[in-house]
Image (cartoon, rainbow, N blue to C red):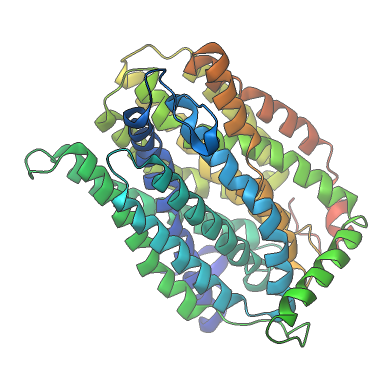
Amino acid sequence: MTTGADAQVSPQLRRERRGWYFYDFATSVFSTSVVTVFLAPYLTEIAEAAADERGQVYPLGIGVPPGSFFAYVLSFSTLIQVLFLPILGAIADRTQRKREMLAVFAYLGAFATMGLFFVADERYLLGAGLFMLANLAYGASIVIYYSFLPEIAGPNERDDVSSRGWAFGYLGSGILLALNLVLFLNAEALGVSDGTAVRICLLSAGGWWAIFAAVTVARLRRHQPRQGQERGTAILTGGFRQLAHTFRDMRRYPKTLLFLAAFLLYNDGIQTAANVAGQYGERELGLERSVLISAILLVQFVAIGGALLMGRIAKVYGAKRTILGGLGVWVGVLAMAYFLAEGDALQFYLLGVVLGLVLGGSQALSRSLYSQLIPPGKEAEYFSFYEMSDRGTSWLGPFLFGLTFQLTGSYRDAIVSLVIFFVLGAAILALVPVREAIREAGNAVPEKV
């Protein structure tokens, strides 16, 4: 049965929207199974095995404690994207070969993720390199994927369409994580070590990404004419010219830039909290990895309802006020995390329920709200800056978390330090005059913002 935003559209557009939803379904497993659940604690163990008598590893010749290694890798991998994503967005808009570019980066990321299967023994540098490649490709594909949202949904439909995509993503990550949990909990009975089970789970995440991305690539289509006529290497030159024009053009939209500043801050907090949750639960709270995986699995399924619920709330109160309410809940989540009792699995599960209610909805509504603030024909370029704030420049949170741990030796201090991102982000978002910003970008103002 078709309901909501998809009920009154043509069969062709409905089919395309469902194909678009599938990319959330395909890639959410990277954020969940790879980054949040398995890779952070596993790569920390690999780094510990490679540490010298001083308890340090030396990537690039710099001494780093294994407990901070993954946070620094995450930070460095996102900084690399700052140089790459804007030119990618400019090329995508100029050529309008977004579908083909999405396919290239989707499969580059999927195969790099599958390559994590070979990270074992003391090969922590191999793990770091493959993860950075996968994260770069993930960010690039997401820029292009997001740029389709204004093309497949009108102003009054985007909150609903974006929330449905995010909910579908949590369904995908929840299904695969459940299968991973079955494997991990029964590793001994199946005759494999915990490390081998983790490697198989990482392999499965890459395979899942590859399989379901094919649905998206098959169903999306070109909506706009090519903006430039360059061929071959001249495409890159044209992309740089387009990017230079966009940088000059962005000064005409100060309210959009103000929203991006707010999003950069509060989303840094969201991404970092989600990415280090497994590390925090294992290292600070002393929880078994099976508890961590099952708690994060719980979050995935609660987040399905949470994303849809926040989408419905936004229909009544508007996306901006709904996001601000969600950020208030996030501050409470971090405060609860700081005071969790060591070894108390029930408290960790309850925290996961609260987190799940606001996790997907905050991000889904931010995505749809931003799509209203960008000028038509510049979708991929402007979403490249959004993705830089989402993952491409989400380095402050991981850096602060890693630095706080290095200075204090406490993961509790590290997790609560992230509150600053939510407070400052909410304060700046509250200053954004959304209706004026939408009109300033040349778009129709939806009924509720």
